[in-house]
Length: 206
Image 1 (spheres, rainbow, N blue to C red):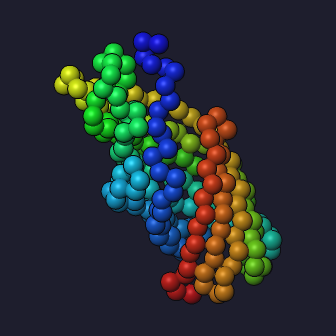
Image 2 (cartoon, rainbow, N blue to C red; image 1 turned 60 degrees about the vertical axis):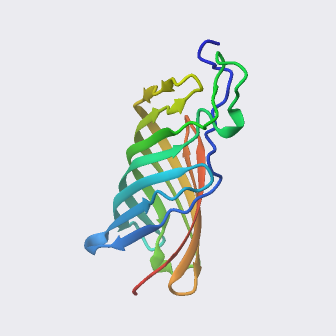
C-alpha cells in the first residue's frame, strides 16, 4: 500500500510504430542488419532506439537452411508511464500523481542475444517460406521516474534489473514478385510476453 502496488502503470504508450531496417548480405553466407528509430513522438512515446545484428546462414539440404544470429539493442523510450495525464489528481497529496503535468519517465530496453533459426531454403523458389528458432537473451532494462508534484518534489527513482530469458520465434514469408516480400513473425519470451511483428521489404539490387 505504501508503494501504491495496487495501481497499474501506463506501459502501453503507443499501440503501433514503424521501425526502419537495413539488411545487407555479405560474402560467405554472412549478413548484417542495422535499425534506428529516431526521437519522433508517436502517441505518448518518444523513442530513440538503435539495433544491430550479424548472422551466418548455411544450407542443410535443398529444402532447409540454418542461420546463427547475434543481435543487440540500446536506447531509450520516454513517456508518461508512472503518471499519465489520465491519472493526475489534485485532491490528495498523499496519493499517487498529485500534480498537473504528466511524468517524464525514461525506459532503456537494452539487450543482447543469440538465436538459431531453421528456415525454408530460398533456392527452392517457393512463394511461401517458413521459419522457426530458439534463442537466449540477456536483458539489461533500466527505468527512471520523472515526476514533479504540486509540492515541488521530484521523484527520480531508478530501477535496474539484469535478466536471462529463453526465447522462441516462428514466422512466414510470402514473395511479392521478384524483388519484394511480406512477412509476419511471432517472438516470445516464455517468462514475459509475446510480440507479433509484420515486415515488408524489397531488394535494392539482384
